[in-house]
Image (cartoon, rainbow, N blue to C red; front, side, top):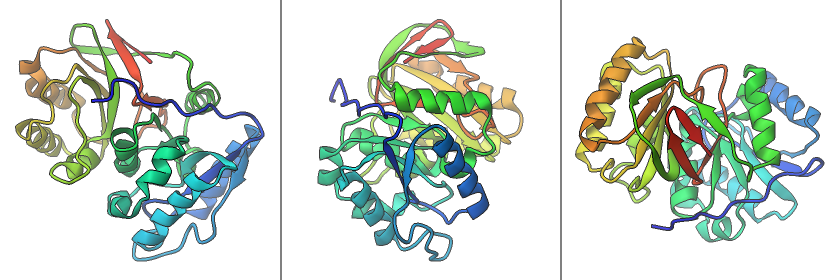
Amino acid sequence: MISKLLQPKSLKIGETIGICAPSGTFNKTEFNQGLNIIKKMGFKIYIPKGLNKKKRYFAGSDIHRANIINHLFSNNDIKAIICAKGGFGAIRILPFLDYNIIRNNPKLFVGFSDITSLLSVFENKCFFQVIHGPVITSLGENSSTTLKSFFNILTSFSSKVTFENDIILYKGNAQGILSGGNLTTICHLMGTNFQPGFKEKILFLEETREAPYRIDRMLTQMKMAGAFNGIKGVVAGSFNDCGDINMIFEILLEIFHEFQIPVLAGLDAGHGKTNLCLPLGKMVRLDSNNLIC
């Protein structure tokens, strides 16, 4: 395992952000609201041709969506890449990405939810740090705290940030590379050529609109597949509209009990109105109830 992943350069005011749509089609009103927020922050925007094409529920064919990402990474004028929307579809484009181009041109890459597929392969296959954070269409609904976190991580990616977690499920301290994202999306990568490894890492998980028994089933599958062997700690983000949160915590306690690692919960990152930005692939520390990045 590579102990230190490459850290892309922070973004400067006036530099250009490229937009990609690896998953579903998007609402133009929500999209334009997000673009206006980014413009007000002082950044330029590049929108590739055919960004919101339609093929079933996807923003174009798998190859089309992959080619846009390949193009954005190869374009030297683009300094960061932000995804337009999640939904479903990012996993389908993984075989069509040019990993040599992406690996040799690391850039700030931002997204969450279904975009976890891309965050995972860029971390594990291309060996650079990525950002678990808002997509363009969510920015208009995100809290001011989220927007501040978003701006700060884009412009000061190397800076240290401390996140307080309200709930300590298992006490302890740990250090490791922060990895993970959306539980369902990670679970769907299991058994593929793009399956992530979490050994000696701090695992971050979040979810939305999945009943507790489904969360239990996914975590159990991953545990039985050995995905949690050797992990250093767990941080649970938001589990939005997932039913009884105390039941979710009970499931986490059962799943991770045997590993004797710190497990924290209550981090405002995921599908809630507040979606704090996390640097995946970065060496972080769990200290009491804090995640120090």
